[in-house]
Length: 433
Image (tube, rainbow, N blue to C red; front, side, top):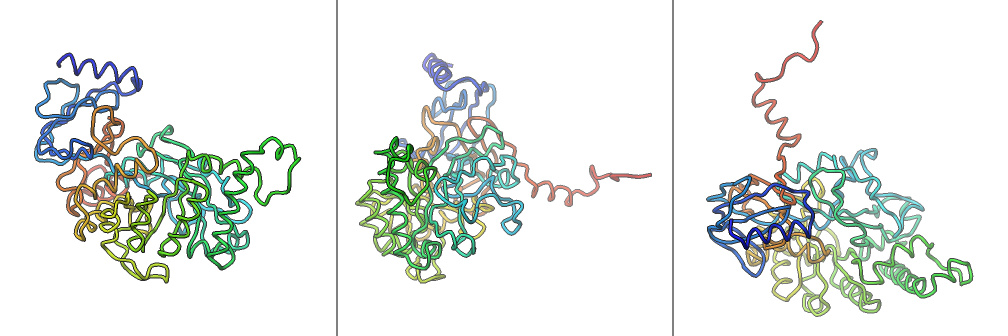
């Protein structure tokens, strides 16, 4: 190992701690760094203390674990931009569902983090599909009677996780606040989009008022506010620009309304949905507002998405909009890993290949200020070694590393597969008298 590499390892160990002692050398892979280095046809990656120490050709380095990745493709791990991981197991079974609440519990102060279960069966399932991190959001069902009665449009606070199933897997807290505009917002706010818009506007205005007069308001020496102190406190990271405001909007006119709102309050806006985003791509680019889209949504399933089309991601990216691609909307949390196939479909409809890889990794990291998304010196070693092209349906992850630690790819599905494909091995009677 040369002196420069030793220096990097020691320096990174001092900077990032020494929880990951194992050094790993991945050799001979095609590497998509998603950094300024671009894609390398044949390269090695050296990892120490959970971070990437060096990326290059024929590295002169030794390591405790050497992975021969010749003929394989290596990318950063997939980062899911929107999920309910750890908060839900079966959507239709309320006892396994902690991601949404009704009635007075709804609001910006709602924090689902205490309900997070890092041992959820959905976590290893998505990890085996190449997902290494995810942003977790609460939600409100627009069709729930209690929610409509409450007439609230803020779902609550989000957090980010690593998919290593560890109890300390929460990566960041208060990453964003989720609110509903457009069709879903109208359902929650009494029937009109305008009402949803007014509720978000009022909440942000009162949050600013609270920020400037916190002491007086808390002493009760202020006017009566519409939002309670807990909700206003929860909105402080948003009005301070430290957390994003993620709003749902699909119709182009709803998107423009959201842009106007964000401009007034100077908040970091992220649009979720944006089925008709391509119609207002220039305005999105000018405002530097990123979008999280379902790239295979091309059906006019509502009047909000009559203009949905498969080249939405390509057109938005061409205009200069930062695009993140989520899994398919239906049962998204169960199938987050399918975002790579959605990205592949986007490539088939004009999205440049590397932009597609970024849309499921580095763009998500940038949007939510998370670690990961690139393979470069100093980056966290969230890495997937693929059997082939990661955007190809028939490819699959052969190895997944999170913070430099190799992860199990065993899931309930693989256990069932093995049990019934090899019934003669290891399946004795559970009980015999």
